[in-house]
Image 1 (cartoon, rainbow, N blue to C red):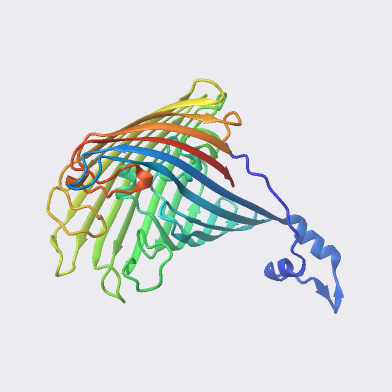
Image 2 (cartoon, helix red, strand yellow):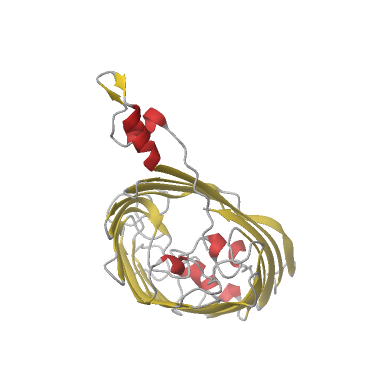
Amino acid sequence: MSDSPRIGLKFGLIASLALGTPSFTQGQENPQAEASILDRLTIQPGGLVQMRYTANRREPPAGEHAWIQGFQLSRVRLTLRSTYDDRASVYVRAGTDAGGSFRIERALVDLYFGSTILRVGQFYLPGDAELEPSAGRTLTSDYSPTGYTLEPGSSQGGMAIFEPGKWRVSVAATAGMRAGFSQSGDQSRADIAGTAYFEHRFIGDDWGPFGVHSSPSESPTALKAGIGMTYQTGGNTGDTDSLTAMYASADVQVLGSGWNVLGEFKLLRTTPHEADVIGTGQRFTDLGFLVQGGMFVNRRVEIFLRYDHLIPDGKARSPGFVQGTGTEEFRTATSGLNFYVIPESSLAKLTVDFQYMFDAQSTSIVSPVFNSGVFESTGRQWTVRVQWVASLG
């Protein structure tokens, strides 16, 4: 459901130099060479504005109100993609989260060699089908509490993506899970991390449809499965995190004519090595799974359901890679609908959903995060969200 306009912008001599082709020959302008380059250069600006009203009812900590409600910009993003003749592209995404913090979220260069893509920069680690689509292309208002808690996040490094036939294999060497836009040796980084994600497309002609959590009417049936793992070690260089961690996942995604289903299993295994933390030297294994599905009842209205379940290790721990310190499971059910202003297009849509959390946040490993709809609570809670999203690119 990509409706992004492609806008060609001419950059003259700067573009020519950047692409390694001279604009001047023996001191004279070479308009033919420059025009040839500019004909192949495409700049695609984009952005996203996500405005949300949230109402939450909870069992609050002592001294706090049971009700939380209000309007908030949950995300604002600006994107820019530059592509040269299907040989190379540069993509940059910057934005703010619900707290208003501005940061560089993605900054990467892709080089294309037939069915192989070489990527360097800051990118989202492969291996989580739920978190693969951007915020404007999710089925519900936002990602699940399980997804937020176990996510591998973004990192800096290099990656190769191979697409032989119906297979897609992504292999990366990075600064570690959730390293984001950080400096070498920072505490948020690992010494080294490796990622491998294998996907097989059983039905379908290309990978494009799997990048969205919706499937328009009259879409051909598509089916893919994936399995992946990220492993990292730290604490031996600079001030890197003294932690050994592994993230593993397995997913199945089915798309049909006006309907879609996604199932995913997630595992996060961490072993802290710092001497002054609870649980140092112990291995913590946290499990999660998610099942979701959506269906268009007409070309403008899509209904959806989601259930996610997080099962922590059960041993006492200090806040660390997982911020929550509880030992109890956390279950969430979400239902709602999307209204597409432009039929079956993610350019502009209104989402209304209801999220019920069966368990106490305070005894789980789930952190209270506005975008996830989870707030501090000593018991059950529920959240209603009304969200407007406009996105390009």
